[in-house]
Image (tube, helix red, strand yellow):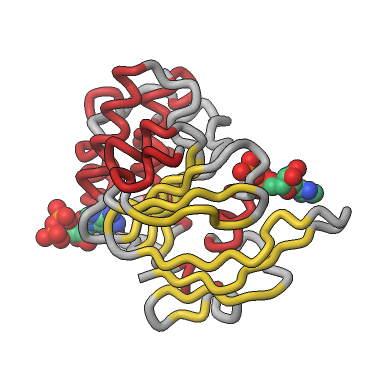
Length: 223
Ligand code: ADP
Ligand code: ADP
């Protein structure tokens, strides 16, 4: 369970991007829906320990996320919005390299990890091709593979379906749903369908505040 309490983030220029956000996120897929500028990325980056909140509290299980960022990072998988620039190395090499960075240093364990993940996201057949040449959907699935290194218990996915065609979008969302039952996955998006189709729980963020929270079926009339 992830618990956010009274989170405030004020940027240096005075923009109050988060204005007292409180949220309880159980295991499974959780949709964070909101228009551009709502504060979604700010909230995602705060949970991912990439920025420190002005005030408020974030807890994941026993971890005080604001005070113990290194501990959260060990169990975090993060797929940022701008995951899209790649060197011209192969998918296998890039994932292998990322596994080293994540601390999977034993050669045999790393081989198993990389092979398992490439199969899981259905990129095994293109493992020797450069990620730079991948389609949008393939890139996003590669992004999921890198986010899954180290078996994270918390996975944050920021605006994942931007630029995907309908078939790619479905493959990607179904892949997330398969992973999503035993861990906490937060899917941040401005697309209602991404959330409605897959997430048993959701919240709506606008103007830096949670406006609605509940099951999509109960909230759809209000959207
Ligand atoms: P969303 O992801 O929902 O589009 P953001 O978290 O990116 O929302 O932005 C929330 C608000 O904070 C917006 O008004 C945005 O312009 C502002 N903002 C985002 N990043 C910064 C920044 N680095 N400095 C100043 N203002 C920012
Ligand atoms: P098991 O769950 O029985 O370990 P897997 O096929 O899932 O079987 O994993 C095989 C090997 O790959 C194990 O050594 C495991 O530690 C490693 N592994 C698999 N997936 C990951 C992952 N996402 N991150 C790190 N190591 C992984």
